[in-house]
Length: 461
Image (tube, rainbow, N blue to C red; front, top):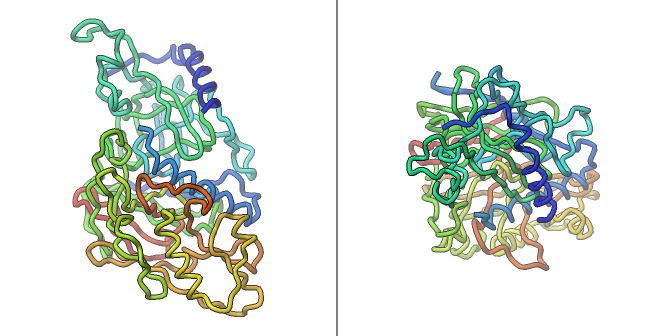
């Protein structure tokens, strides 16, 4: 994209000046989790249109590849459609908010006083700018050297010989070349910068030499991202976490300060009363390294009102090209389904909801389908939506997790999305992306040691 290229050129011009002060180098925790918002003044029509749009953009990003023993962190909800945590980096530690993302595997923050961000508004309820990390204020910040193995965690497609051409000697002794800049493209934006190793200050421990991105420009990224996906550079991998879990508070608490927790478990303590399904092996496809990051689950069946929805098998299991299957993604708001999955689900709701008219003008406005006009109804009965997973576990969604009021109190819409009915189907990548809206008030667990995904419904607080 042209805008990203122009920012990158500016970044290349600036970074030597910005980093003269940095030299090159080779039980559980609980973190508060909150929702992240950039525009709390939107009306409901605008909000749902925006959330549907960014969910579809996120699906495009995921589906089209660009090649003690416990720590607890607060997790906050925001009307931007995602959840955030706050982490401390540096010496002394600087507190920075991060969007929690199980669909990526890199941790980066807005960085330096020269940080540039295009189309990155902060919440209208706050006059503060985007919080940035200041490397010169930390005594432990170091730029990653080109021959540092951690540089290869970012630039996976290149070997040291090709990317470190300034290191002429066979051993690379005294090589001063730094790790090349990174650029990451997301569904609705991008970011770029330099790789650092820095001290991560958890609530009960300090982790030195943590690989983190110092982004000096971004587009449409209102905060840094904490990647919790698979991969060496992810937050769980660098910390040696055996499992992590979180409970997502309802989106009705967006931007209120109400939070739940992200729990990082270093011993894989046993959890109670969870339904489990295996985490499936990731597809291995040449040129599609992004597939290795996601958490695949075996969604075997969807029922609406107790009736099985007829879904072609090819959508439920990845094929040899990595197309198909289901993933869990905290960075997606509304669950995405390929058209071949969504249309049968849509038809099941339309056929079972009797005596309530659809409002196609709201459907066109928001991008959500179906929407029903309930203004003349005192009570409304809607069919139950249930996901059935490999191993027999079932996730029966509360009504508020898949239908929501849009606009005034007279219209409700299904909060799941698919490709435009008038455009080409997104046939590559996962067919189903389970988003955070459907996981509200669910405790979910990613057991990395035993390769299983667990969940139970509960009120998150």
